[in-house]
Image (tube, rainbow, N blue to C red):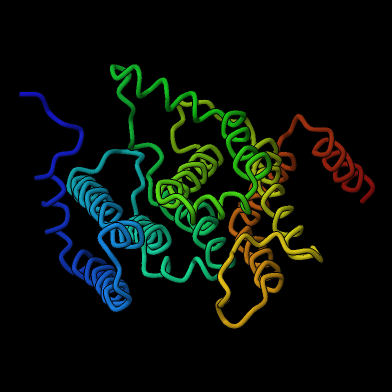
Length: 322
């Protein structure tokens, strides 16, 4: 019998082995869904609205991922491989990333998004800047292997993993197809509303995987300086867009609601969205700083660099003088 990539028995074993974590996470999310459904039904919503605003597919996908992950984590604890570090904080990071993914992607917050550009910005950018790094930090870099026999999947992942490809995708999302147009079309068409958070999550995961070298066999930038410049360039586009929104004197806010959330004007809501878009870039800017200091440490400790030689000669001259 042919084995499927996702084994449901494996997922169930992983969830059962961590009853407290599973029960707590699922209870919070189910409660969130129940509140959203009651709000919608109170307004006389139909089945289409139910599937649009409270989509259980995202929750089910998160449960499958969590079950697979927890099962693999338990197997590693029992039969750990050499040179593989999988501490408990990585497990909590992955579970937290899944939780943020569900909350931002498909939650009762979606009932209010049509009244606030700020909430839509948090929804999309939160997937890139919050959920993506938490998921990537939960991946032990030297335990996941890619089956080269699955040529098409491996080829697609290898192609998408190239920093140049990721940069072009991100440039298209933020520049050629501005977030204002994304918001307008996303609120107008249910398919775009559902898929756009997934696009931001996927691109964010690729950027963080390239920077932290989760899959060493896939294309990666060579050193910390290249990675620092690469991540800084991707963030510059986002922070630039946020700066334009924050400082603009004219409204680019696509929200057409006559009752804006928190009683804000469309321009004030746009300024707040720009502020959040810039502020949510802090995690990846911290990654830029880490790469820069790693590069500086390599330069200072490399005996072949000119800086190291100058410092060594000065110390030797000082010792001879004494």
